Image (tube, rainbow, N blue to C red; front, top):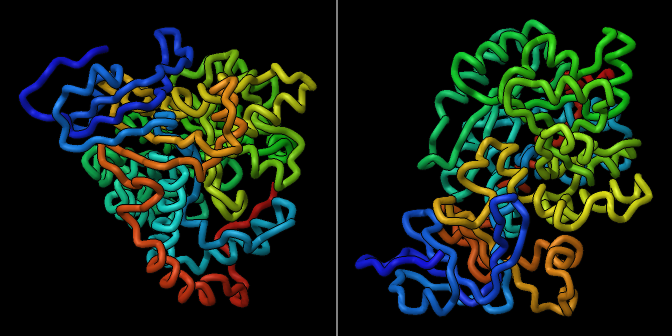
Length: 454
């Protein structure tokens, strides 16, 4: 599309780059020597460098040797848990929760959550992540960080049934209070923790609230095979069948992980009335030595979007969606013994359009096209590890790294330019967080916020 000349200058023009574009069948392609015209936080046009040369602009970025991608989306994380990065290593899932993470989380104060979220947002901006779906506690603090940092986010206040009805009520109050905040950059969800920590009555009540208030639901479900087998042994149903009988499958639902989804669950997911998506964070599954990964292709065959995620840095050690993108391609190929099982271009589709739909933003982000929000990252491919380029999709998925992101833009606002963060003071955040760590990681009190028993 060629923009028409306007009296008012564009807010931003990015030129001399290669742009990832999608056709009307959602197939990825690349427009070379291209320019992106941004006005009012929205992509006005994708044209040629020559076609944009005469247009006035308040700001220009010339980006030769760089690829413009839709901002990456971290579809499921617990951003404040960067404060626990490396604290619980080389442990099975049950010990990880019961012996370390849930005892430590009983110490959390809102200040810890805010500092962890600031550090996490800095990490994600530097890695080209423009939007994240967060599921944690003291989420008012996370909302403040999203507002200040300039990022986009789907936020939910997590709750357990052990908290009584107050937990569910706080989740609803948070969702209603912050929906549409930060100039529309914040969307919200109800956030029950999981079917093994939230009982059927609470899940059914959550589903009713979701329908009444038009809210999506974000929860963990069928995270691993053990959870599914335990649910079958104790209750005679899989976790996905629990979601069906409590009618959560008839809401807009974002499921975290789903490596325990079994064949009998697929018809239920296919017939779900709402928008159902699954967030896959493959690095964490490898760390926990889970036997399966998210059944990406089987879910795709029934029309369920699979977005990319990292989970929290306490389990994954990083918030690097680039790594998730590479592993989303590699792990299923290895498991199936077929290098064609999930291709680089398919991984890019999961990282862009499918991730956008997973967090309920499929109409506004996930591609660089006229009318879409200007959430854009520029990736430098001039380094020796990305040259030469024979297959650009493969280079992006398997050779490029998060450190190759030069510039990160959300709603047309530059949050990082040439690797310089513009909205977060990292040294101050790190210093304040370090001062709080001794009290945060203390486990001598013998408490835990919940017990993992699946």
